[in-house]
Length: 94
Image 1 (cartoon, rainbow, N blue to C red):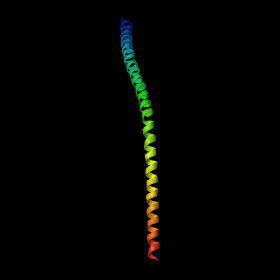
Image 2 (image 1 turned 120 degrees about the horizontal axis):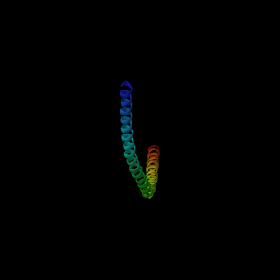
Image 3 (image 1 turned 90 degrees about the vertical axis):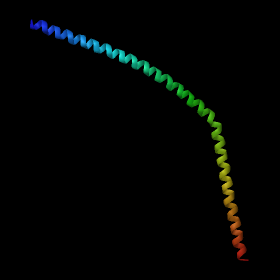
Image 4 (image 1 turned 60 degrees about the vertical axis):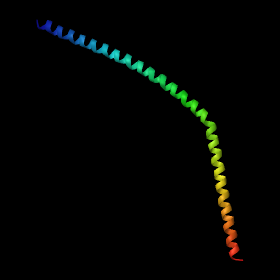
């Protein structure tokens, strides 16, 4: 009788483990679907980022050109100010 009870417990444990494994398989299947969707959306996002970068390249060139012009204007303003200042100092000593 005791051996029969032991076998019953073993069978119950095996049934429980079988159920647990089935639940794990369902979870893995759900996670796989979720991962596939995530990867698909990530690929789309990467493609969109590449498109945006290619569209912004001309704008970046324009920004760089404007920055260069502004630096040149700033340098010319400083040089002009220095020349005017020096001429006024020289004019004081005449």
